[in-house]
Image (cartoon, rainbow, N blue to C red; front, side, top):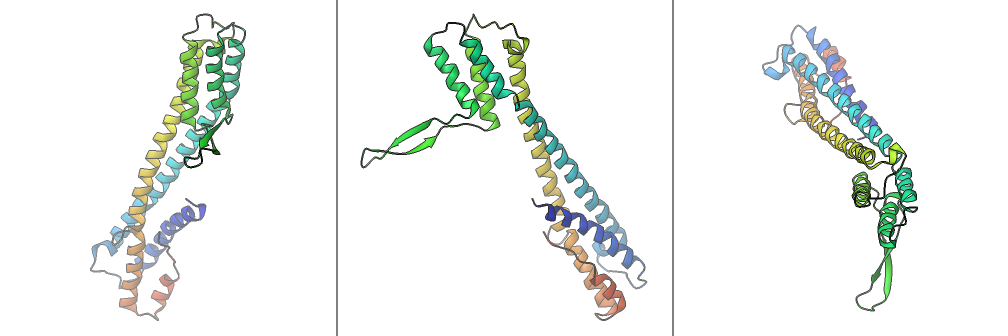
Length: 239
């Protein structure tokens, strides 16, 4: 969502307050429609302001969760490589070591090319990258390395951060960081829907009601009146 769009939401709310302040001093302003009455306009303003504020709060929470996840994953590649270095001195079978290195390559982003064969000609055609680099996939591949380590009795490094129990704790941190991103994003999306309904829902949203306030003022004072001229300058944007 663009920064301009977010600024437009806040401006609509601020302009609603300006509109309310203006029509409040109009002695003839006494609309027959409930949602145009001053008391209900004030309620709409408060609800709109709260909705916009909550969206920004939840957006910041989501940004913080994203930053926390980025920090959590910073050492993943180097940690994975250090694990491989430990395994290389243990005299493991080529198969076990190759399996560990293959998982490490996926974490590092090494791109092995998988060949495809043209069904008609039988010739090798384009290649497809098998790099898996999403956060979830990175954590999954790291988990597979840890599962492999659990089957190797001789894996017992002196460094605390490379001990299996601490690697498992680190993996939990990785998984939880992505979970928090997903949770905060879901909450943000819910608040965005709520805000958009309050501001832009047809018939009951801020935008529609603001336009109706202007129409009502024009109907009682006239299109060329200074009263209408004052509020016609207050611009609102639709979603």
